[in-house]
Image 1 (cartoon, rainbow, N blue to C red):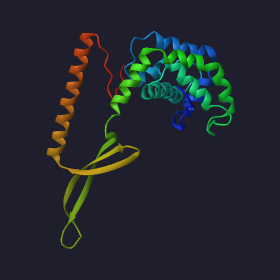
Image 2 (cartoon, rainbow, N blue to C red):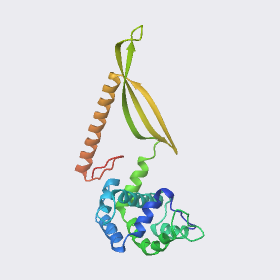
Image 3 (cartoon, rainbow, N blue to C red):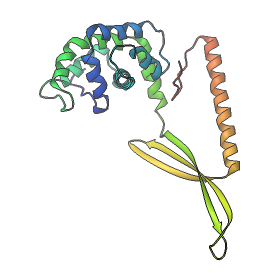
Image 4 (cartoon, rainbow, N blue to C red):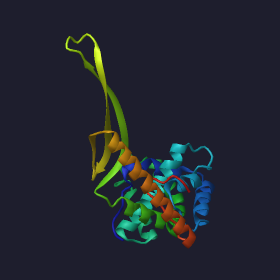
Length: 229
């Protein structure tokens, strides 16, 4: 692979934290990842990192995002791990290094890149990276949903008394469309809510059935947004 790869700003915090760790801490992360046949969730990767001293949960999440994001990049451009590491090294050269990566991180990278290479060579993180890429191959991705309940009074003809109160429910959905974040609000009644509840319960039951069948077959399963092991 010729050229260079620039660490995306979204992964910069995790990169800086990872390369700044003591060498034995980085090696511990690599060894613990290497002990697993499969990684089935981002949370599982975070739990491997979290025992490292002086790391907050946010720090562990940032490092996990960097490692997984780098593995996803390797998969998307279809290169060997050592080629990607060389390209990152080129991207950290003084005349190419982005302003959000400090010069000290460049020095730490020289020492830490061999550990990243060992992690990228591990099949468990490469499989998780491919699984996460498949999960996000959707036109729209839900990021948040809420159901808001409003009470609207109905006044009498003289507006001096409340004759009736109407309960209104609104389904508020936030989603990603490519690089855009959008929202949509839908008025729903009790029948709609019962239908949504039934559909959600059926979907959860189907996921559990798939999970059990895959477990019986010895095949690991990862699910979008699944924070369980």
